[in-house]
Image 1 (cartoon, rainbow, N blue to C red):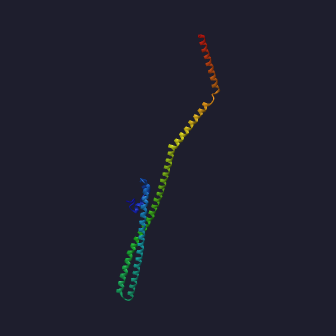
Image 2: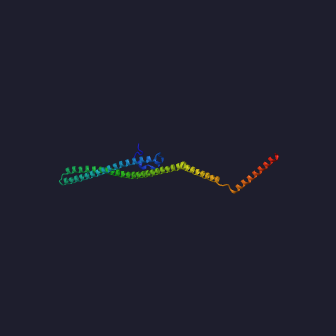
Image 3: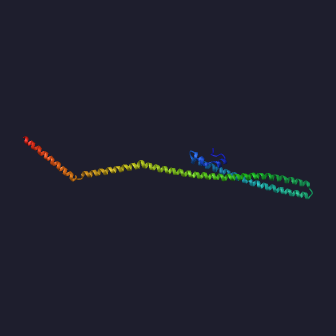
Length: 221
């Protein structure tokens, strides 16, 4: 089943409102365009057919008027020849062709109206089709932009969850290594001068206590 049922439905349709409610706007506008194109082809074919009919009616009407004119001439000739009976018959033929021409004129007016209506429908359908194609172009553009944005966001997310963490860990490891190297340098470096004197004082105190201990041992003997 088509989206639209008649030409009037397409012309009166609010494309934006229909697309706003659609679950898949791109798919819907594609279907709209296809149906509009098919309808437009059909309407143009009907219009061409009506225009051909119009020309046919015009030719037939002109032929009827020519025949009416011919029988009018014959009626005039019969009167000149004092043949009223033939003049009467000729006038009857003339009236028949005039009536036929009048009937064809009504058909011609109807055909003209139909052609005018078809031409109006074609203009409005082409406007709707152009609007639908522009909407499709915008939707495709938005879809591509959304895809590009998604790819970029996924790339940033991957960077945040992998590359960034890895780089941070590498940086942290580099700092730990630098601190360890600094500790090694400090460990290998010669003690400060104050520390050396403190060590000497500690050694002197130990020697004094050792001498006192030996003295007490000797006194006890």
